[in-house]
Amino acid sequence: MGASYLANEYAPIFVFILIALGMGAAPLVLTMLVAEQNPDDEKLSAYECGFEAFEDARMPFDVRFYLVAILFVIFDLETAFLFPWAVVLDQIGIFGFIEMMLFLVILLVGYIYAWKKGALQWE
Image (cartoon, rainbow, N blue to C red; front, side, top):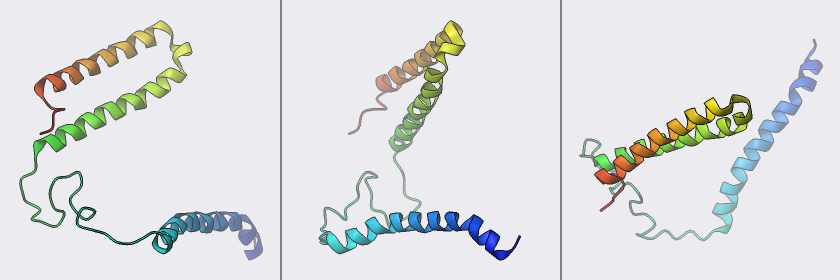
C-alpha cells in the first residue's frame, strides 16, 4: 500500500469534492458578476418574520409563528409517511390501508380543529 495506491483510490473522491465545490461556488460568483446589484428599502425590509432582524433577542414573539411551524411539521411528516406507505401498499394489504386511513383521519381532525380555532388565519 504505497502512496500511489492511495492516490489512485482517493483521486476520484477529491475530484468529486472539487467539482461539487465548483458547482456550489459558480452560481454565487456568476450572480455577483452578472446580476445588477441595487438593493432598495423594500428588498432590505423584514420579509416573513414581521420584525427587523437586528433587535433585542428577548422581544415578545407572536405565538402564531409557532402554530404555523407546528402545522408545517405535522403535514410534512404526513407526506414523509405517505410515500413509503404507497410503495409497500400491495405488500401490507387491507390492514395497512385501514391504518393509513385512520392516520389521515386523525390528521384531518387536527387540521379542522386548527382551522376552526383560527390558527390558519393571519391578520
